[in-house]
Image 1 (cartoon, rainbow, N blue to C red):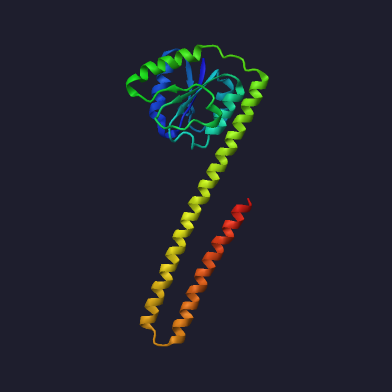
Image 2: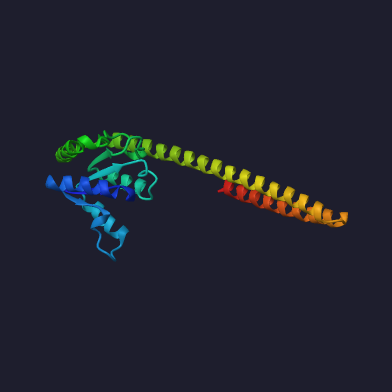
Length: 221
């Protein structure tokens, strides 16, 4: 059986252990380690996913943040073949499209060999056909889950941007105050002091205006 093994780059060592266990069971395992130098990554992955009889997803905390996570899980579910999510780290997030599937627990290193043996047996079981209506409902639920996830991600991004913006404004204010104190101590001509403070205030206003304009443009997207 051809098995497509999906994992995050940071989990390469664990993936190699799982791949070795599956190969001991007689399965042929594809991972990005098998791509020869100079060959297209996306092209090799497309061929491997087309030829795969089953898909195994090695889930850790960093997996769902990977660039390929949603793409690979979507292709796997659409293929109608065996798909097995494997939770390899406590607290790992399961991608939305895989949440309806029973996951295999691989978090305990002491029972890892037994868990891999169970994974081998699960791969050999026939895949039950999914009724058309159930498939349509599953796709709809997955689409909704992806939409919710996108909104959550956008909200977190906006909150992060606002935090950076508040920090930048605070720094700018501190700089203006510090410059005013220095100028007041060095300059004897009040007109010079006023002009310098006006220039600093204009610079601060320009920074604030730029940030607000960027925020509005981002909100319109």
